[in-house]
Image 1 (cartoon, one colour):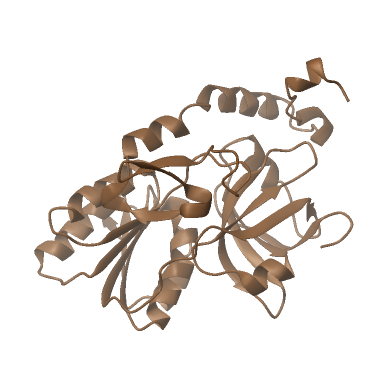
Image 2 (cartoon, rainbow, N blue to C red):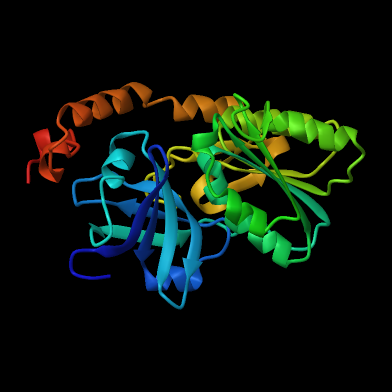
Length: 298
């Protein structure tokens, strides 16, 4: 870390609005384990957002994050290039994945969920598991990390919604086929959009197949203090940042998770519209104004 923050060693697009960053963060690189994440802040007036560590190189002191530009902050982040700086990179946070010998493991990822699934699949294969990876994307040009996934998997199936690459259909269809074909599956790991993870959980529940999902609720501080990432698991409140982000899929309240993630959708839409309408705005013009400033100005 320098005076200006954490330097970006590499930045390149993997797909439309999906960008890979290698960030110089030696302490995080040394401690990171599969399944963990960092919380970043681009500038001093910016919001904090969680991003999974897709890879790390302790020798070079770098971590890799993959960002999909959806909201204001992720689109601002995707403007940065090699040589630029990120103000804060805090981590590694969250509980590491449970990596041990299970047997046959099916790793299912959708979209940028592959950035989370890849390091876990790599660790599971190193632990001696037979890893079957199912990569899902809406269309061919949104598929990421295919070569990396093939390098750490014993079998790989690519599924696209429109059939532009691999097989046409849904990732749950391929999972169905594996189960129906008599494949003995000891563990399923599903990472991606909430509807996909919920659908996977319902496919494996009748079969009694242990299934893990990595959750993505709204998160602020990453230490369990703010309560923003609260999720209901087995009828109890858990915090994804310190108790997760991975949980037993058959115990997660996906309805509650979806509702919490939608709570600020209108505010997020307004912030994005303002950002897009002022494409040359600097941090001082796109900052979030805290309402406390009206009653207790600096």
